[in-house]
Length: 227
Image (spheres, rainbow, N blue to C red):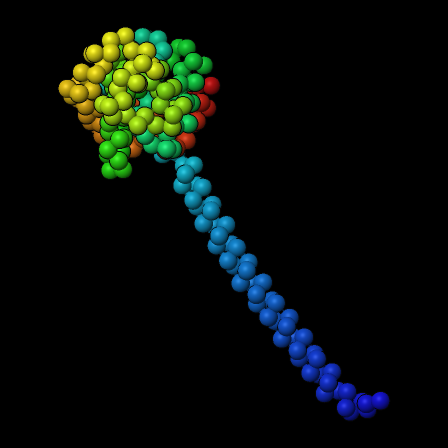
């Protein structure tokens, strides 16, 4: 049997090893918690950025034009203006939402404006042109539903006959000429100028009662405002 003198160093060695192991575990735990906190913070910041809805008062001189244009709903009544990009992925559910909102609130006139992101892809502008021409045929609501169901328009002149058939335009020839001869493009440029005067930089955005709302949740925010 080892003597007490012999066992004391062994005990001290084991204690020292345990202390080192405990210290390593504690250090690893601290680093893990620090890393976890950073990840949680980053996720929170990302979520907050996507959930944020920016809002500001629209200049008085820019408001009248925003209440005119292609509309869903009654010809008169309070106006809710929506700026959309039919080929923006984050806008697809919002397009469906504002069509549903128009049906829920029959007294609200939904004025639809085109605000394509021309920096992302040419199809964004082309889809806006097709939408404007559909609106000239009184088919903006049907076109909006068509685009939302298909996650975008893929709208080029090549597909104009197919689109006209699917949304039931009354004059297919006029619809195609509007696309090919610049009528739709002129309307899109008008909408873009109106957005700029209102301080709106990107879709989706809405304007209601003199206030502009911009962000992914803008239309959902309007559900609360209109209740």
